[in-house]
Structure formats: C-alpha cells, structure tokens
Length: 462
Image 1: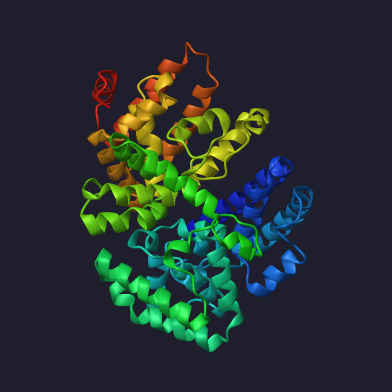
Image 2 (image 1 turned 90 degrees about the horizontal axis):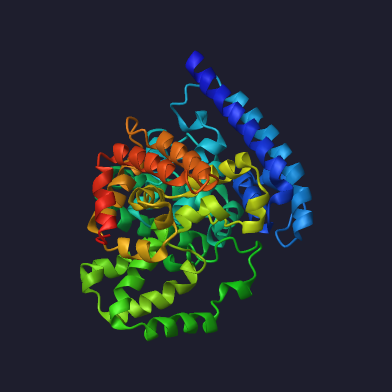
C-alpha cells in the first residue's frame, strides 16, 4: 500500500507541476500549442465531461481568446485529474479499472487489449469508445506496441472524426466491436508482426463499416493539427503543391536521387516511414532495388510532409527551438525563454519523439565529433550512408522501445538534453570539451568506442 501511495504522490506532484508550467507559459504559446494542449487533456475526459469543460470552445478562435480559455481549462482539468488520481490511489493497479485516464492514454494498445482480454468488463463504455478510436488509427505492428500513439493521435482529424462517430452510435454497436477485437486476442498478443498487421487492417475495416466512416489508410495521419471542426476544403490536397513536389523530384539527377530518399526517410516519424517507405521495401525487397521512377514518385508524395524539417534539427532545437517531434518555436521566442523554460520544452519534445527519432537524436550527437559538425547538414547527409549510423539507430530504437529497465536510457536522454542545452550557452572555448563528455556518455550506453566514431568521421568516412 505504501508503494502505491508513493506512486500516487509522485503522479500528483507531476500533474501539479505540469499545470504550473503550462500556466506560466500560456502567454508565450502560439495557436498550435494552445490547441494541442486542449486536445490532449480533453481526450482524457468522458464525452459529457468534455462538453461541460469545453463549452463554446472553438479552435478557430484567435490566439488571445485561446490563451484566455486555456488558462481556465487547464486549472479545471487539473482539478479533475487530481480527483481521479485520489479516487484510485489505493487500488493495486493490476486491472484496467485501476488506471487513470492519463495512464490509459499513455499505454500501448497491445498492453491494454491484452488486459481487456483477461477482464472484458475492465473498461467503461466511453473508455471503450476511445480505445476503439485509437485502434482504428493503428495500422502497424510498431504502432500497436507504441505507448506514444494515444497522445499522438489527438493531432489528427481522422482520430477525432472516428471518436465522435463512436460516441454517437448506440452502446450495443460499441460492445460488438470490442467483442470482435477480443476474438482476435490470440493473434494480437502472440502472432507474428505480419499476422498482427493483417488483423489490424481487418479490424480497421470492421470499425469503418460499423460507423460508416471511410478514411483511407494513407490519410489517417494527414492534416496534422488542422483546426477542428475540420474544414472540408482542408481535406483536399493542394494540386499545385503536389505538382511542385513532383517536379522537384523529377529534376533530381540520378546520382542525387538515393541521397534525397535517404534524407526524406531520416526526417520522418516511424509511422510516416511505414506509410510511405515500407510498402516499397516490401514490394521490391529494399529501397536500393526500387526503380528510380518509383523513388521519384515517393519523393513527390512526401515533399509536403517533410517540409520545414532538417537533418540538424536534433542540434538546432537547443540553439533555436527547432524541435524534432513537437511544434517548432520561433527563434525570437526561444531567445526570450529562461533556461528552465527551454529545458521543459526540450523534455516535452523528448516525450513526443517516437523510438526512432529518440535514437537518431542520440546517435547524431555521438557522430558529431566537433561542435561545428552538429550543424553541418552536408556532414549529416553523408552520415546517412554510414552503415554504423543506421545500425546504431536501429539498435538504440529497439532498446528504447523495449524500455529495458537496466538500460538507463531514460536518464541518459534527460542528462544529454540538459548537457546539450548547457553546451549551447557555453563559450566557444568550452564547447569541444562539453561535447566530448556528452559523446562519451552516449558511447558508454551503447557499448561503442567513441574514438572509433571520431576517427571515421574525421577521415571523411561518415
């Protein structure tokens, strides 16, 4: 009981501290961050409570109206979150019903549906609606096991459209869909990656038929943070933008095509890579064997998706606020923030990263043997061809995804984030020594020799 109380107390402090940090920063938040904050918390509320708390709220309001609303909403939501935490503080935490809405939101679908298979009555009907909506958004083995999916989906109109549809149908339809998922429990918990993905596709189609919602798989993660309610005009891609992307890809010389594809892949979140790159890998065996015309078409499709992202964002985020996964800040706003505020935003960006992005963040720093190399886009473009880079990214992403308790990767990422922020504010004379200390810490966690990385990069092999 003491351990459970200790955990609840830690959660209570986290919720209170989070609210304090948000309220202190509301006047510095832009439109997108304000709307994201409301979405994230509102998704943890039952439909009736959500309507009561949101009232006349509209994402099309101006930024001043949004800021005034967020000030009130965050305080009200925090009281509700703390009350829910207190009501469940004495429970053992072994069942779904023992978990708070925020814990459910940050748990992988695979784990939740496995618990639900053991206890089919473990969730209330409104909770089932949200879990089915999250499942509808899940189209791959990796996403099914990704604890970050529950928070990520609130950014996309497809999730909100599906959740609203589920909240409008009678309870028996929701229960029938949940039972259908549970009939696939054996495959979802013990099948191969391919079997699980086939099953996820079948469940996606079943939910779509039951709700009358038709959203192609390649549109599930489209229109990130478009304002809700979603304007139908925003749903139609800009043909001029698409044509421009295709024209740029068509004009690429053959010798630059592979580099452009590698760069686009490195800028993508995992689910984006799976959506656009994985089908070609499955069809042709590898991207190296993919016909050039297919690669050019691929670049045309993803040009808009990766616009605004850079290979050195992993370092620029410390200097100018160009985050890797979270919303990018205006550099002028970044300059106005205190070190504590910057660290808070960087840690939020850490939490928003998927395992592959988190791995790239650390491995790119490891290979950057001088402070200048951190911001050298050409160096990092060449690095993509280095077999050790890809091998370490894949290895570290696997370690992060498995959340190995003895890996120390959570504390390592936090420590690296703090040290990199300090490096960004250090004098030029101090920066090389600080960077080397960071690289040594990362190398030790991965079990590699930092000097080998240094020599390879120095000799132009990276």
